[in-house]
Amino acid sequence: MKCKRCGRELKKEWNYCPYCGEKKTLFKFSFNLFGKDVEEEIKEIFDELFPNIRITFKTSEPQKQIQIKKHVPIREVEKVVEPKTNIKRFLGKLEISIELPDVSSVNDIIIRKFSESIEIRAYAGKKMYFKVIPLEEEYNLFKKIFKNGVLKLVLSR
Image 1 (cartoon, rainbow, N blue to C red):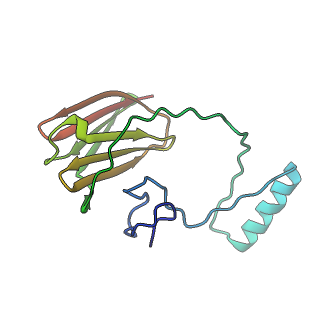
Image 2 (image 1 turned 90 degrees about the horizontal axis):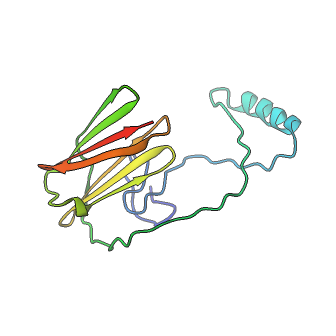
Image 3 (image 1 turned 90 degrees about the vertical axis):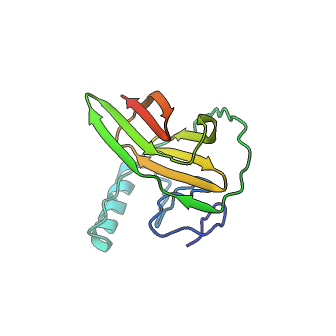
């Protein structure tokens, strides 16, 4: 399977493209709804055709997005590796430990926070460690420590 954004080859177990960060989607439906009765009609059709698929509707308005981008040089990557990860939950916090044995500096690590996940990319020569961790609730990055080849992230609500 190829990434729909950058066209690079993806492994079937990946949910995100490690090269551009695009989320892999199998099906995507979009409706312009004008009333609640239309939502009910569509739900009835989906329930009949796809009884195991739950459908929900979101009302969204265009939002202004402000992006602050730090210049990240493009790196040549020959191998993508998923690092060993340990996640602990306690008192409304998440503690995530990610093993990055060949990474030499915190400057070689890129952390991107999305609304439903956090993405970690770490570079060691021509190897890239890539990990996407889904988040079921809104968490903010509270602390980041990189020591002895282990990245420790603490996220809080």
